[in-house]
Length: 263
Image (cartoon, rainbow, N blue to C red; front, side):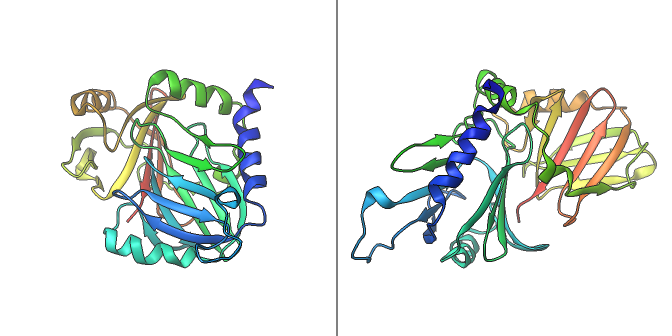
């Protein structure tokens, strides 16, 4: 069925990586990281045809072990260069979609896992290269996003649903002001001076399955205009991730604001 196409691609990725341990992991430009699966460069049987590579490109990400943060895309590049080396020698356990925007959770057999987060409109959120097949997620345009969400919107995301719990701190509070910060983060002011500061967080504003704005918008004024739609609206429910790094605010009018810690 058409709606399962991306799920089929993810299953194929798992098959392509089955039996291959991580032989090299490195950062390229900015926070982009490449994870090579297969023989090491000095192996006698080294052949390019035996290698697979997972590229985490234009998406925010963080590497975890249990509830412990190791490193993320918002950290200093020196820390990224060093800490991602902890993945060396690990084998893939699973890859799962977390939502209709193709955020993924990649679990490894050493207890680590990597989560990605879409927060700016760009192609190549993540890509897997293999001898048999290349597959990636493009979320640059509204058209490309509709293709991805169209395939995924009917899925039940059990991995994501199980990682949230209720968080009542902001429920029934009205948004009085939102400031877009130079860092790309947000400062949200509620009545009675209650404040939510997201200066170091990535974020995504959704409505009815559509991406409205995020951390690094192509047009800041467009993002600010989308955020104005939240003024005076009430938080109807609030959830926090089980590791207490991320928030999900459901807002009157069908809006959802998600945050993601990556440093």
